Image (cartoon, rainbow over all chains, first blue to last red):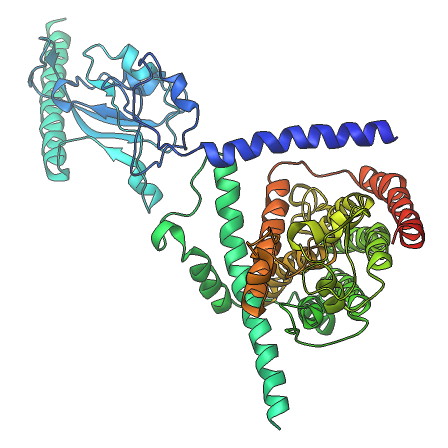
Length: 195
Length: 356
């Protein structure tokens, strides 16, 4: 009993010398260095924690944090929305009546994106969407610190079309579809008559 | 009439001191814990975060005092008051300097120990009145712990009192310095009556009083419910123990009582073992350091500094050692501290009879 009590006192004293060492040791404010720096892990000795909003550790430019979409390069193929494990990407496409243009890598664009929403509150940062994207328009950026007051503000809307534009394109598509349908019917009629 | 005015002034002054100390204590605790854990603690409010606790208390007194609908209203409201008043009244008998004591009681030590035991009653009332199982568990643990640890603390104190032969805290204080009326012997063989200073403190009058002081200090940690003996408010098990249901001013009073208790038990330890308001500087030949640094103002300074140092040690221990389990707590009390305190008391008797 006394042996364990004495042992308790000795170990307590050891712990207390450790903490009093830290009480006076942590004088230095942490210098900001990259993880790739050679003495990055030596910076832990005798320094305080990072004073976060005032000091920030540098992250690489190609950091894998929040998603960003370059709409000019998007061909609205919907692959990202299909692969997403948590279904955080919501795309609504409208077929264009003709080729709209080309992306920076030369792919022809044939679809309008009426809606391209990414719910960052649902996103799990797996990066699968960036892998499947054929034109590399959806990327992860180095933005990691974003706070909002409304949950709905975390739904990032990337579509560059206004509602009116989308309506207009829909009407055009319907008109074209109706024309095609009419042409098709006319062709069928002709065929039947020919028999 | 003017007498009563002085009484009120003294009471108000002590209350102001307790409140200010609690604010300072919370700030110091946050800073010490931060530095121990390689953090910086509060830095934003005021220079070095010095106004943080003032901001906290301003916020706290604006908050609503919520009384749970199933709580026993009277017990619930009265408990924090009783907890605080029990500790606050303990300050009444504490000597601050030569001839400076709020209330000259010739059984001062006895009174102080009686009055701070009432805190247990307040804690039980808080636990029972809250009608919450965590609160009652915390209160039961607190009562068991405080009552157990009063025994080793009491015997450690008695061993000092047997050497001093008085329960009057002012007499005990005077004995430990150059103003002593009787001869003081360093460890029982070297007459240091005219040298004073560190050498005439009670822990150096008899070697076993060092052990008694350590016992008292450990027991005082348990009595003020501080880590590693904080099982009554063990956050990881009982939310916050007996004060789980308190908010606003009720919670503020419980907190005030905890920090005042820390200072009070430290001050009792200082008075009984560490020379009270006497200077640690001895007379050395022509350098009459002890004579120069013994008066009322120096007395207040020394007793405050020594008590604050002990409070600092309490905080240091809190942020180092993990919490004891209930059985370990009782083992330490009954199987280690109590027999040791008994032995100290026995040695005190022998010392008094044969060596003084």
